[in-house]
Length: 362
Image (cartoon, rainbow, N blue to C red; front, side, top):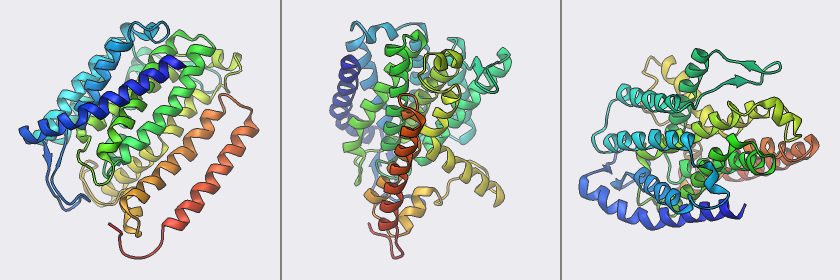
């Protein structure tokens, strides 16, 4: 655990130190978010936060690659994830600067998923009614869909200072707990890469948050949201689609369905926002990719909450859904149920106290 803690802290420190330099770089090259009608920020703000995260991840990998435990995660699989993430960073930086159209970005995201497939990162089976081994073509299609949905789910919630980085940090921590249990405690070799990836996700998000919290001095931009979304998707695919769920259950490290439940639990809030947005836009005759100001965080903000309170409410709901499912991997069902009840009561109490009629608090 100490090596993973060092990895996360190193990624956080590097991202915190590198981000101010990226702010100046983004301003120099015009990668700046101007004020639009659907935005909540009130002054032009630098983008390219994803580039700071990528540089931090790259340097972290160089520094921890020789550690005895973490070093075991470096291999063919991790190389594929790194190359796919690098490709998306370049695409995202171009979008942050020149505003690419939605179909171009979608094609780029699919190509990044193709890079993962080239390195053997794909869904192999699903824990449904036992274990269903998927035909390669179905597994590949499902892999691409998971990558696309996860990337765009993170992208959709990146509309408020500190929101996406905080939610991804909570999601990454939940993934890490389960991956660490499989990789270190139970010796599943395929869980090594997601353990390292999720530790880095948590680190770069924590390091980025001081610069991204309200009032933000930099946005992660599409470079950051696509980067984080891809890493989460790759971790989920490697962790839940390639580790035999029967073996997990046999080791008493959680029920057979846990690998299937975990990705939905940790990403429930972004996925819910994505589904609601797509349905809302299609019903009104608009493109699913057309932007609006009706996301979950916009509605909480419009209820009279400040930016910080809105982000905190969204963090709490994310934790309420993610933590009990993760606890289920370590503890009996009744402990997970009690944890879930306590978090639900806390989250409802905080949300009630903070969501009240009135004008928006800025």
